[in-house]
Length: 103
Image 1 (cartoon, rainbow, N blue to C red):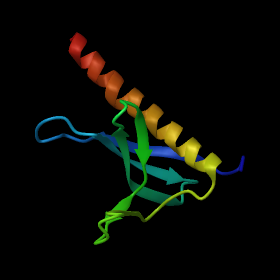
Image 2 (tube, rainbow, N blue to C red; image 1 turned 30 degrees about the vertical axis):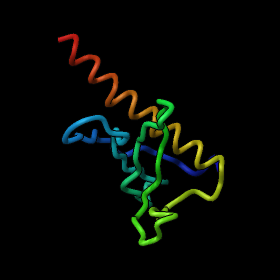
Image 3 (cartoon, one colour; image 1 turned 120 degrees about the vertical axis):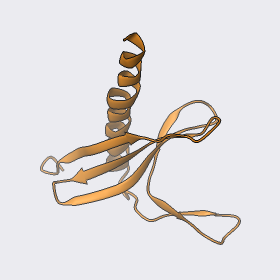
Image 4 (tube, rainbow, N blue to C red; image 1 turned 180 degrees about the vertical axis):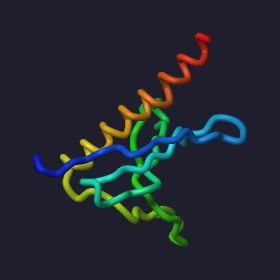
């Protein structure tokens, strides 16, 4: 897998209309400069921990209202992608917000 380049293309903040929200940001990711996955999500768990959600769609199933439409079948890839997106979120969203407050 050393020849496979995983590059975070962009990350943008999600603006909540009102009140607290678990959705903090969206991210698009480019794999090997050939495949783009849009709609990755940075989410805040009920325990206050950030995690990455893969693109999904809603279903009519009340027990499983969401279905992933893109996901990594390999745990190492899933962890690597999550770490890269969370790092980009911290560097581009959180740290920039902190810098803006100092101005």
